[in-house]
Image (cartoon, rainbow, N blue to C red; front, side, top):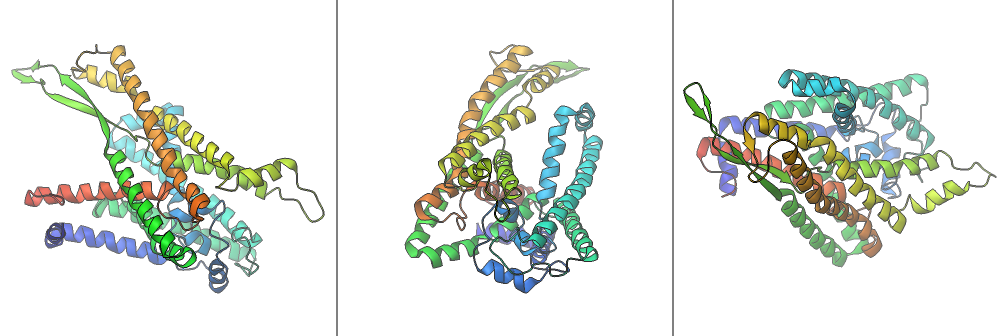
Length: 436
C-alpha cells in the first residue's frame, strides 16, 4: 500500500492532480474559519465553547459545512445548496419532459442541466443566506447564547453578509468543479468528505473528555464495525446476466458477448437519509417560529412537536425517521432506475436476459428484482442512520458521535470511489493497482 502511494507521487501527472486536489481542500478548510464581515468572531467562539449549540435543527447543514455554519464564516452554507439544487434538477426530469430530453441528448444536454443546477444553486444560496442572517440576528442560530453575533444590524451590513455567504457558495461550487476537472475524484463529494472528516478529531476528543476512556473505546469499536458493514453493503450487488445475439453489419459479425447489469443493494446512496432528515426538521422549524410570547400559553400541537419530534432519543422520532428512510429509498430508486428504459435499450441492441423474453417480460423481471433488493438496502440505510440516536440513549454520545448516519455513509462511499479512481490511473501506467 505504501509503495503504491509512493508510485502515485512519483508519477508526474498523477502527482500534480493529487497536489492540486489537496490544495483546493486546504483552501476550503481555511474558508470555514474566516468570519463573514460584520460577524463578531469572539462572541461566536465563546458561544460555541459552552457546548449548548451543537445540536438542533441545523445539525445536518452544519455537518456538510464542516462546522462553518454555526461560526457564520464565508463558507457557512457549505455545499448544501448545490446538493439541494442537484436533487431538485434530478427530480424535475420526471415532472418536466424538457429536462428528460436534455438528459437523453448526451453531453450537450447534460451540460445544459449542469448550467441550470448552477443557477439554482446561487438562488438557493441567496435564500439560505438570508435565512441564516435573520436567525443569527434574532439569536435563534445559537440557542442559549446571549452574546450578539451580528452587533451591527443595519441594512448595509446585512446585505453585505448575504452577498458574502452567497459568493462563498458559488466559490465552493467552482472549486468542486475544478477538482473534478483537474484533480482526482469527484470534487463535490471530496469537499463533503473533507467537511465531515474535519469534525472527527474534535468529536472523539470530546467523547474522551466527557465520557472517559471506556466510552471512547466503545465508540471506536462501534465505528470500526459500522465502517466494515457499510463497506460490505456498498460493494454488494446483484448481477443480472445479459446475452447479446450475433448480428451481421456489412461483412462484420458483432455481438455474441455476455455481460451483466449490476444492481447495487444500496442504489439510493445517502439521498434517502438527507430527505428524511430534512422532512423531520420541518416540524421543529415550524414549532420554533410558533413559540408563545411572554404570558401566553403554548399551543397543544407545538408542545407535542417539542416533546416528540425535536428529540432524537424519542421512540416516535426514531420510528418516523426509519419509516421515512424506507419510503424515500423506494421513491428515489423508482425515479433513478427505469426498468422499461433498460429493457428497451437491451432490445434495441439485441440483448436479452437468459430465460426471459425481451420487451415487457424483461421490464417486469427487472422491476421484480429491483423491488426485492431495495428492501434490505432500505433497512440497512435506516439501521445505519439510527446508530447516533441509539448512541444517545445508551452512552449519551449523540452530539459527539461521529460514526453513523449520513457522515459514515458519505465518507465510506467517497473514499471507495476515490481509491478506485487512483487505482485505475495507476494501472494505466504501472499495470499494478493501489491494492494488490
